[in-house]
Length: 443
Image: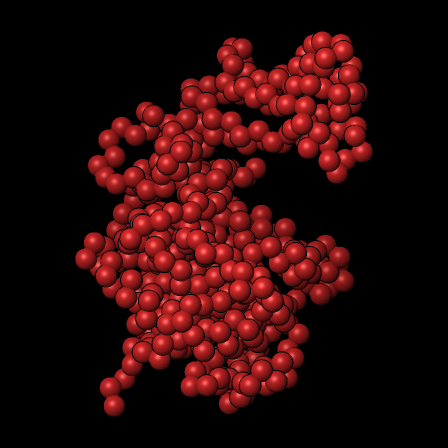
């Protein structure tokens, strides 16, 4: 009998009650046209009965110095599971990297989170989409933030398609992403990868393996840079192939378990923020932002098919200048610019985000009585770089959740790259007292 082509499925799961429903839905919704090779890094307390009660059969169990390797079978699918206590976890990318050690030359790879639902025949749909893209791309990869679902309300799944776009720079100057919906008759070209959904040829596992030292923030931009420089083109699916559970307010998180107290008690060898600090240095090194003391990236560096400069041009973003092209934040939210790139850096604008706190003591009128608040961001030369006006209604929304004595204002500022913001000035107006004195804060 002819051997079916296989899909290697990598699932990192941290204390997630949705893991078993995800596994069952993944397997039950598959078309049967492909052999599924499921690999799970299960970071939990080791209660195997949950899987048996869900109809899974434990076929083998072996122990190593670091973890137990369990082999389960559900229907006709084998699930290989690296099982270890959650105190031994080192983060999501580390767990994904652990899964990749179980790769056995399968033709395709699917990387997902452990809280997903799937369309009927998801495997057939993904493969067909990927293969069709090879007319345009030698090495296509499908990725996006999937639409959402909520357990127990799955009939209310989001019915929209999304592509990934630039959201802003974090406080540590790392690119952050968001998504916008779209409607097209075919996949659309993009630049960014979503850690919770990547589908590509199996060689992606070997060419762009997850960096086990990247903890959380920066995972997606680092993976996208590495994939691009290894010759991969990102495409966002034009139809739904899976859903993702967002929110998860009650979910256990590694930063809640791996805190300073856990380290002090000896439960973990490092607090989460220590791993996070080293991780961000690796991301900055990869993106050319860490000149003084770059990290040693080893096999997790950039590829040689395309350059980092080409990646920046394709994004319309300068990592070192924290600047973007106007189209990146414009109404079209452009996330991929085709070559030739020309003198694109000449059109860059700086993009910075900041949250400013204001207290009642800084104003003569009660904050709740202010009719409008004028906000201006100025350069050292007193150039006005940005202006925002908050209405009284917006001010009261900012006051919600506080004691009425302070507000926090989020600023999302874009300005010409030759300027540097130096000061923020606030002036309040109310109908009784008129304009207040100007409050100035350093940027």
